[in-house]
Length: 268
Figure 1 (cartoon, rainbow, N blue to C red):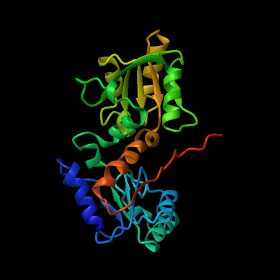
Figure 2 (figure 1 turned 90 degrees about the vertical axis):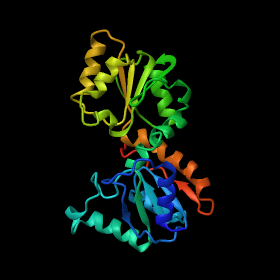
Figure 3 (figure 1 turned 60 degrees about the vertical axis):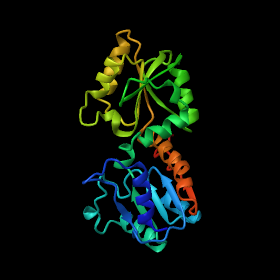
Figure 4 (figure 1 turned 120 degrees about the vertical axis):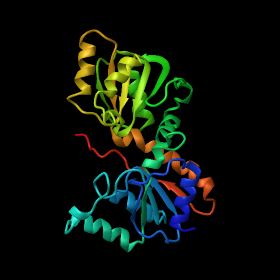
């Protein structure tokens, strides 16, 4: 089975919307490459590429960019040693990389959210009449307990919060990845908290000088409001883990592996 055939199989299954302009492009290799194995991951870092090579996978499906900008543009990387050595590693091992981002979020259900919900087990708590952004009615617990749950489920050493650890959490909103930046409307996360009467908002990326002070001020005024910041990678990686599960039976002759990009930060 060739790279193009794998891509077509995925898009035929989870298509629907066909984007005329999309970042879902082949970033390395050829559409005609015969696939020996597939690695799904949040981002095709050098560490991920090396792990894919070790597992015999010559096709990496990544959710986020390979070449450091949202559209994976490379014109600015002429003579850049990081780019050149990374590209050489890919070329030397015949690795194809395809980005699966826009179509993944626009599938009949958002496949990144599906993976996160599977990982934390919140499918039964989804507020049924609430479309995206998604909100959940969970068994009541403290912000400290909720943070501990995310740390355990998502394998995090530390977690950022805004508000009191004793905040009572029952109604929760989740904005994965860049969704918590507002998706072009910076006030959207704050409006979501107000309109859905959220106790806590769980975020991927944040803008410190917009959303943080809103939640801090609410808490300082005695309101039951808090925020958990998972980061972009931790909030979306589970979607790529889940992808390996649903892709495997679709490609019975090709081994599919999940490779965890892991958090980008080291905490001292």
